[in-house]
Image (cartoon, rainbow, N blue to C red; front, side):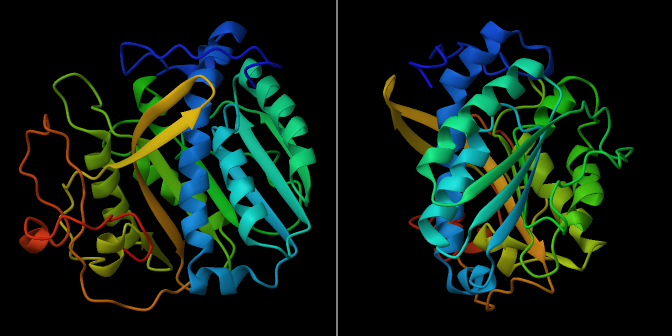
Length: 324
């Protein structure tokens, strides 16, 4: 990526430097790819490596030879590449992956096409990649029959990585409804047997002095799934175990450490939810597990979280692991 595409590692001093990626030029897209694509790759690889190591999830995929992945706001596809690597490592029966990326920025699509083309030689399965030129103006009103999977069938993996916060920053979605609107619009696309949705976003504030994106995601995900009982949370573990009775205003954060040729130790701080159909992947019930949620020191609201009664006494388990 750095040698062939001339991507550049240039981390910004401000957290909001890439709030409007739809407007990025070729040069800015290359800076984004060099700076943030390695983080997105590592995040999704680690998340899905953990998923596919879980017995119940591995069993659901064991007889599949093809997979359909749909990435909403796919960008330069670092996140999708991370998932492809996890599939290559853990699902030996997969022979073909159909990957559809919905992205409105041409420079980002062009970079994604080049990276996927280069990556094909490293995976043992075929990759059929289609980059859709489409700008989503609203999740709630999103109805477009041309932007569908280019393989017949439903979606096995639905991906939204750091895109919803951009929609909020650009004024296309209201903070109070953005995550709810996304889930209501796209969760029905999930396969009834193997469908998994990764909803991942930044762990920053919506506006300076305002609320936090993790707080909005946590609250809206819980509320939306109350009215969509055909779906359930897989991770974080406390949210799965206390579904329906958790505190909707908690802050949660996962920190990934990333190493690549331009940076020996880069940190990525995100929040995410993994959701599946209730008819498909089912994990056995467990007692509520006190886990680390890693609130930032500047988080001024009460540091409450799922299983908050015991979290202060047990701070050695990662809430985001499927089996912490």
